[in-house]
Amino acid sequence: MTETKHEFQAEVAKLLHIVAHSLYSEKEIFLRELVSNASDACDRLRYAALTEPSLTEGDSDFDVRLSVDKEAKTLTIADNGIGMSKQEMVENLGTIARSGTSNFVEQLSEDDNKAVSVIGQFGVGFYSSFMVAHKVEVVSRKAGESEAHKWTSDGAGSYTISEASREGRGTTITLHLKEDASEYLEAHRIRSVIRTYADHIALPVILSSTEDGAEDETLNTASALWTRPKSEITDEQYIEFYHHVGQAYDEPWSIIHSKVEGVLEYSMLLFLPSQQPFDLFNPDRKSSLKLYVKRVFITDDCEELVPAYLRFVKGIVDSEDLPLNVSREMLQNNPVLRKIRSGLVKKVISEIEKKAKDDAEAFHIFWDNFGAVLKEGIYEDMEYGERLLKLAVFKTTNSESYSSLADYLAECLKIKSTFIILQVTVRKPFAKARNLRVSKRRELRFCC
Image (cartoon, rainbow, N blue to C red; front, side, top):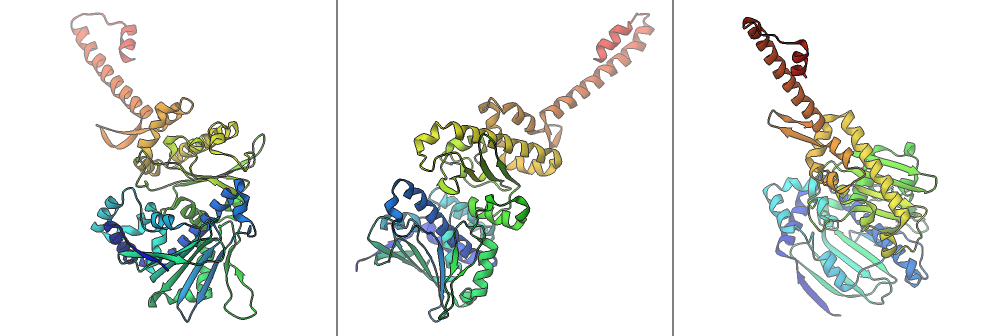
């Protein structure tokens, strides 16, 4: 068996230390992240199988399986998703937050406690494993391939990749738990975490039984959250779904859950963040929306779904009218997608207008984070530019608080009118003293 050793990037090793030592109050999040990643791997394979059915031949039912070994003190998370090749292991597990890692580490180094609120913005969910594990092993076999490989690391500064064996496609992650993380060997603790953080996952999350003769237990409802009536969804479930789909740790500023029926039928579950993502102004940044067709994941890279000035919007759109085998080229010129985009933009702008009217102070905080991006739409979007202009607020030389353009103009006219009236008030007595005639019409003209 050949084994190769790789060194993490210098800043990656430092980041791993920060992750492992700055999220103690949120340790249970590691399980949410690993289950979420496993679900995404299954979604990607389901989509790939639309054009290559042989990838799922003999195993078309997707699930995530958890198992514990109390004697070995290990917790295992396994999926039958798309899996990884050796090169993908290097790219996905050996590199963290490829764009901006150094800057991220520099910011966190000043105060490691910042990690709690921003760690999720950098796609480092897998590395939260090292909060509870002193060693992590990943065995993966890519769908359609016969070879499997094993990635091993203690999170200190290096990792190894070696040949391995795995029955069937997918990925198995084994956590060798630290002494203070033994609670995650208990079924009741695992059950609680999954039901809290991953109940919305749209495939079964199964806990394998450790007792002879006992049945395995499905821990979640395995129902896509956006398909449920709003009355059946709690605020906590919405927030956890936002954390899952948006890979974020803040709470959403606003939630838009809507189902459109008629000529077109589609559902949308959208979130407007309360915190600005680190790469908001990165020219390579893409939309954070995921496109589903009939609850089958299609892509999370659909620029046609949302304009660039709304690139901060997170969530999902699920269409009943697009074909399941929709291609990238079809998405670029699809009339159904254009109509969905129009409805989505209208819904988001209407929600922002409503929030701005109901709570101006909260809207001003939102504008601090995303106003610069929304202003791009004023000159880019011919249809909604006027509405965006009315939403725009500015700070003036007269006040540190925000004012809309309409409020600013009204204030200017008020000041101007006062000034002119004063001029007339002063000049009228002066005119009488000089025996000059000032007509009423002239006074009114000045006042206007």
